[in-house]
Amino acid sequence: MRSFYNLKYKNLIKHLKNKSMKLRKTTLVLSVVVLVIIGLSSCNQSPSKKSSDTGIAYYRGLLFSESPWDLERGSRQLTPEEAREINSYKFTQDNQGRLISVEFVRGDELLGYSSMGGAAKVTYEYSDNKQIKHFFDKNNQAVDSEGAFTYEYTLDDNGTRTGLKFFDRDGKPIENRNKIHSYVWKVLDDGMVQERRFNLANEETVMNPFCPFYELRFSYNDLGYVVRMANYSGDTLYNCTAENCGDIGVSYFTFEPNEFGDVKSFSVYNVTGQMSNLYWGWSRRVSTHDDNGYVLETAVYDQDNEFVGGKSVPVTRNSYDKHGALIETTNMDKDRNVINSPENGVAITEYRYDEKGNRTETLYFDKDRKPVSL
Image (cartoon, rainbow, N blue to C red; front, side, top):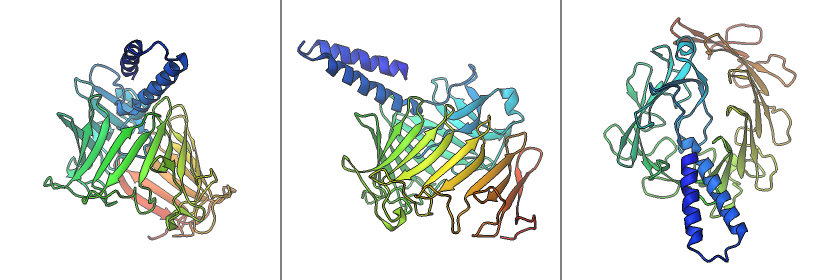
């Protein structure tokens, strides 16, 4: 990022010297600020740093993302020795520093419950200005992800993603599960990343049926963590009033990351900045994390900033084993009393694993620890 900024800055100075000396000092300051913002927003296109010259690094988790524009990045680095006993994301880079794979592993065992679109492993290949992504299951067999077999990214001269297209196993253009065939991205002068989506007929289409937004703009902080996703029409912040967007509409989401990129809160607002409910009846989710970045508790609020009610569960708590694997999730009311979910009667979900870390069972119980059949 720093070298990118320095190059842009030098070009700016050279350009200004060739212009009239009447340019005011404030113009230079504003121009530099814009370049800094653009440079920072592109930081998350850089893969996680490798810990040695092996080209391999391990992390406990992946950074939160709201767009396929983001390249995978790790959070809370582990040593290779620690990764033998802890569930981790293994990043591998080539000799040019380009990301070529991310694997969810414990030691050498691929695990099937990652945060990578249902895949245990993703790989990247590079050809000219193309970055080709494929997905694999825990048996290392190629699989589809979100309805597509191949993700073909287009890169600019700086290696930043500018587009994405989906293809099936035979290389035929297809639409994914949200009826999207292609994405187009552009880093705007204010540093926001503009995202637009199109179907096979090249008609602009929505993010997904539950968030019927067309043009989105993403904002990132100085660490490359996403902090805002906004719905735009042209250059105007737009309020979606479709049925899925609640009674006062939805315009933008905000994300509050901590220093490690863990999302402490996820909030929804309409165009005037008022809290607004999504389709599922919630407006804000607040999470607490332990020192390893694992989510210990998530509390959910509605647009009146009160705990959700009805068929929703206000609070969930999680427990993990020494390997970092989730072993139990408990549903609670706002006073942290264990409750049965109004939807299915489940209060406690228990996960069991074999010695290598593969998930072998998922068990459901009510608040009295009686088994529930789903």
